[in-house]
Length: 228
Image (cartoon, rainbow, N blue to C red; front, side):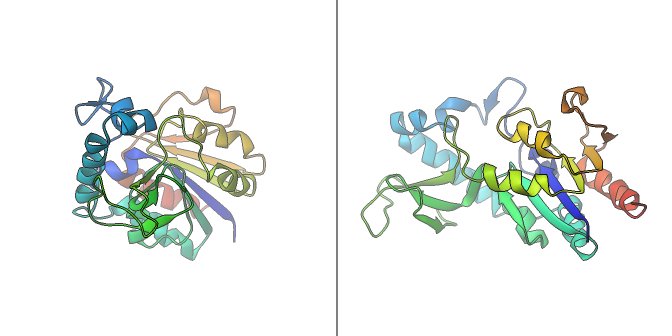
């Protein structure tokens, strides 16, 4: 089986009802990004940050995977599929994908503020005073601005072995995720699905652009992959 790697972002989950990361005015749900997506913001106002992610978590539990997620999962019958996602939702998992790397963490997990290796499955609110059995405050298991991306090395290893790479719903302009494509020396085919695709010349790869929303683009891609 050929190694098929998907690089997914906010655009693939938008059709499920999850808002993209930030609006055109740079705000996220009315908040400055650094207020709710940095450790400094968490230290200054933990209640605000925890409530922000509590609301995101509640929303996630109310939505469902869409056609794009489902097609990616279905392709596992014909390819060795790995999903590398910048999304913190679990929609790929719920659609049936088996191999997923979450670059930016997972909304349905919590971790200790003292020991980042103490990670817990979590579907309810995290509040000030929500602690683990070691009396350590919990926080969302999210990679905030300025924090290391622990899964980036695993993602690089997957990209290096890829035969086909598909970018869905992300411009791949945020590092370190943006640098992953540079490791795709083995890959022979590149596809980019996005309703408003970004400039692709900087990828330094020949990419087939499919300017459609994720679900429609994945339907087209499914047909194209049959000829490879």
